[in-house]
Every structure is written in structure tokens, then in C-alpha cells.
Amino acid sequence: MKMLSSVKQVAVAALLGLSAGAVSAATVTFSLDYMATNLKGNFATASGGTAVPVGTLVLTDLSDLHLGDGQTGVRSTLSLPGLNQFSSGVGSVFIASYELNFPGTETLSNSNWRNVSGLGVTNIEWEENGTTGTAPNRWTPWLQEINFAAGSFVNGTTSTIDFLNGGGYDGFTVAALLGNPVENTNATLPDAYVWIRIRSTGQGIATGSNGKWWEPATFNAAGGRLDVLSVTPVPEPGTYAMLIAGLGLIALAARRRFPAG
Image (cartoon, rainbow, N blue to C red):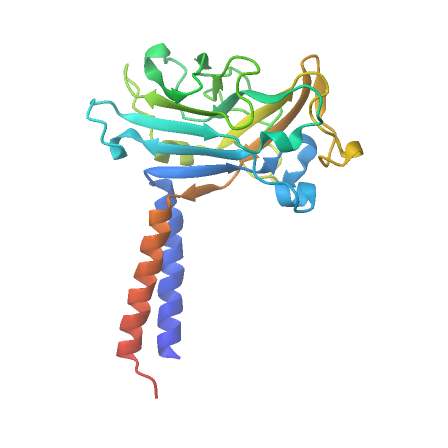
């Protein structure tokens, strides 16, 4: 009983450590699988288990990549292989931007980012200058909108850019983003780390009436629109590997200390 209690206590401590470690992780993955439009929630709930995540955004501290160019900041890689699940079969489905929430970026310029590979970014709006929005329901003044040419980011496209510290700003770190999610005015709903607007030409986004998606889209002059968020960061796999290995060693040590019988 003492051994079991000891291991359980250490396991709880290790899990708390993992949660804290996520805040300082050098690499983190965000899964875009939360439907904010009409407050449908996670994809499993919204679709009855049929939908898959739209894709992922992976952020890595540049210092962890050892590029040798003296730059610090964060590398961002967006991949959305699940966009086609929203298609009605008419027109095309795409995103025009994604949004993050690094704090205090309102004075930055074009020298604070660079395209690396895949589809290039056309511009970054460093702050939205607003206090209300659609998904989630409250912005902070420094929310960044990373823009692509309209209609260019379609299913299977990827884009990698670097956010670069400089000009008196050093807030581009994975830890800074993890510590600064966009708050939701509805306390029962989760805060968000990443947001994408899924758009279409014509009536390109499916609605529940045709059985391909499970809710009506929000239609505007440009076609349909759905708002998808990532609300849970996932630390790099190495973090879990270290946790599992550590728990194994702890359990072995405890067993030796408290032998059976």
C-alpha cells in the first residue's frame, strides 16, 4: 500500500510538472478541432464523431532549431489537410488567414517576419485594434492576423514563416503564446490559442441539410464561413517520452524499496 501510494503521489506530481512544462516547451502543436461557429464545440461533439481535425499549427522556438543566423523568435508551420471535409462540392474551400496572440506586437513592422517555405504570407496585421470579435468573442489589442492571398490556401497547402524578435521586441517565444490565450467572454467556453476562418467561393461550404457537414455556415458576400479554433496545446512528443520513462524509473525504485510480501 505504501508503494502504491508513493507511486501515485509521484505520478500526480509528474503530471503537474508536465502541465507546467507545456508552458515552457520549445515546440508545441495546436490541433484545429473546435467549431466556434454557432458554438458547436469540439469536432467529435459537432459531428457525432465523423469529422477530423482541419489540421495543425506547429510552433517552435528558433533557438531550438540552431539555424546559426543569430535570429530569435518562433517558427510557425500551418498544415490543413482536412479542409475538404467542409466542401459542398460547389466552388472551393480555403482559408485567408490564421490568428495568434503574442503579446505587445502593436509597434512591429515587416522586418519582424519572414517566409520560409510553402505558401508565402502576404502581410501580417500586428494588432486588430478592437475589443469585440466573432471567434472567440473577445480580442486583445495585439492579436496578429497572418494573411494569405485570397483563395490560395486550399486543402493540403502548407506554409512556414518565422516571427522574428527585434526592434526592441523580444516577445516571440512559444512560452509567451502559451501564457497568453485569447479570452472568451463566455466563461463556460474555452480560451483559444489559434483561430482560422474557413471560407468558400459561392456556396462552397456544406450545411447540415446535405449531410456532409453538421451545421449551417455563416454566409457573407464572399461565400460561406466557419470559425475553427485550437483550444488545447499539445507539448512535443519528447515531453511525454521523458514523463513515461521517469515514471517507470520511479515505479522500479519504489518496488525495490517496498518488495512484495
